[in-house]
Image (cartoon, rainbow, N blue to C red; front, side, top):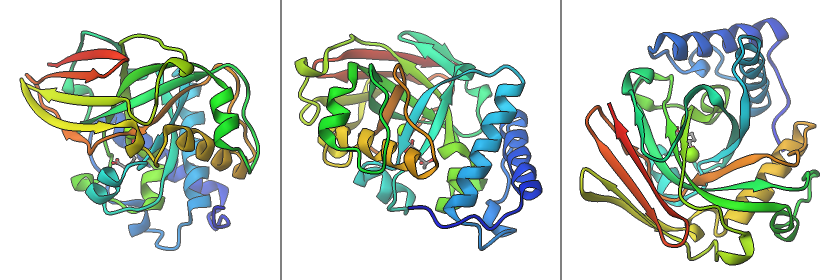
Amino acid sequence: MFEARTLDAATVARLAERVDRAALERHTIPILTAEYPAMTEGDAYAVQAALQARMEARGVRVTGLKMGLTSKAKMLQMGLAASLHGFITDHAAYGDGAEVPVARFIHPRIEAEIAVVTKHALRGPDCSLAEAAAAIDFVLPAVEIIDSRFEAFKFDLASVVADNTSAAGYVLGGRLRAASDIDLLTEGVVMNRNGQVAETGAGAAVLGNPLESIAMLVRQRAALGAEVPAGTLILTGGITAAVHVAAGDVVVVQYQQLGSIRIKFM
Ligand code: 0L1
Ligand code: MG
């Protein structure tokens, strides 16, 4: 599924440190392929894994997994047409009503997403929608905060995978619902920023069905020799294009059946 690795372990570690430092110091860096144009997706996931190890070594806790670039709106916005995955952490995890300091980020954007928590482990290269559906414990709404470490929020696929798919934080809220109580395809979302509708969409925008996003995550993890354990929080990917946020913005994301999430950016 992913092209073979070409970078040696020392280079992978150096690139992970470069991305990590940019996030910690909140400055942008050139895309990694500027120096390593032949970098593959296999290399990029190795850098992402090294980045995760660095973060965990200083006490950051991985709280789940995310899919990215799962809607046409996002793919068009970023000019990239392949879905990818990363990890999410407790570093910038918030609840409904949170006041989020934008100074924690470089040039943050937000995305309305449908999240799930799994009750069974999912594994293997052939994971189906039915298997994904059967593994869901509950569904909840989420807003992902993304923040590229690359100049002008522009990158290629390998660079953004290495940069943990721009993951920077997330806000959970709303109501927990059983998957059987929600039609994931027609679940509607309206994102308001400062009282104006910024984006609208429905669950089907996520790869035709958010369950496909979960199944794809499992297949991608399998290609890396990993599974999605029971109890995993999964952000299934932005339903709409991402929206820029700045200090002073108040965002309210309303879901049809999952409730709403309010965030004030400070
Ligand atoms: O969660 C996302 O869809 C982000 C994936 C990486 C691309 C981007 O930063 O927009
Ligand atoms: Mg996202």
